[in-house]
Image (cartoon, rainbow, N blue to C red; front, side, top):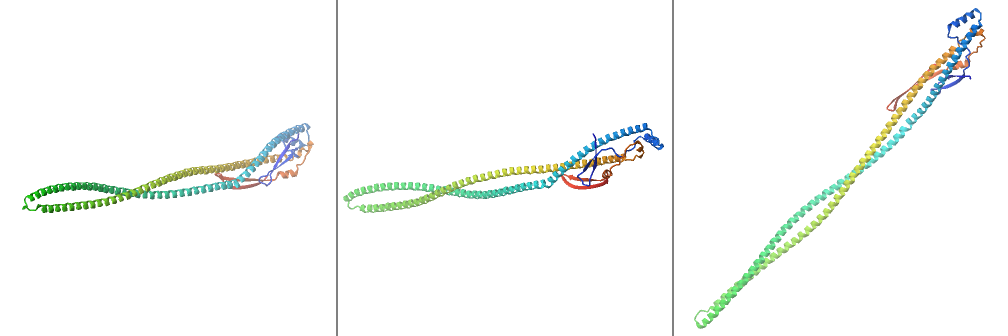
Length: 433
């Protein structure tokens, strides 16, 4: 089974290599054996024009063995070269895939992720602004409620002060009423005393009058007996009229004084009763206002507590949402960092693959030089073998011309830092194969 020999040629395209498969027919020109002694002997024999067929057979067998070894070596080199070429093809395909992925990630992912992150950040900022506005509105309402509460407390304090003044006035009025009641009782007692005194005086007067009448009756009898005695009846009448006039005037003066005092006390009691009734009404009104203000204060306290509770709940919810948004931002930053690290890793892998590719290109170039050296060594003209009836075939000039194609090596250097490409350069080297 005839083996095949691979010949590697590269066009000037930086990424697409070209491979040709040539049949490994025996080379047209044969090189001389490595051994110098048979060559010398052969040269001596050929130079002398004499031919030893046994020596020619030995040389032919040695030449065939050398050709067989060279053919085996060339087959091994061709196999290794084919494996390297397959590996280079695979690496170039992977390189293309990585370049496409890198370009996609570089061209598409960052803007899309940036747009997503910017949209989420705008939503978060808008939500934070709404929460700040709601918080400011609640703080303004709380301040207004605090002002209303302070004004109501001040009003309540004023009402309490007025109530205390009214209670003090009511206490004073009660003292006046008590004093008036005591005075009325004293006056009533004095009136009773005066009435008793008047009754006693009346009794005394009646007793004196009766005694005087008895005396007058006795004197009248005595007068009848002795008409020359002075007339006592007229004197007693005068005394009686004087006492009656004095008693009447005293009774009238006492009644008038009692009536005036009673009227004064009645007026004072009426005034004090009216003041007491007004004070009671005012106290009841103040008590009612105090109850209403107390109810309003309790309602405002409840509303204030409810507003403060809502404010605390809003602050807690705002803190939780802010923490959640911070976690989201941190998670998004972690995603960005991981994407940058992954991009840097892909770039590093791309750089490593590029370095491997360059190393393989250098190794292939080395093998190419070795193969070309072997071809050039095989194509050494051996004109002295013409007497051995060995056919000579000339090498194909086209294959020789194709073997001397120029090759182009492109060195691409990519410098990255924190997953970002900071420098990228290309160097192209052209040299003859």
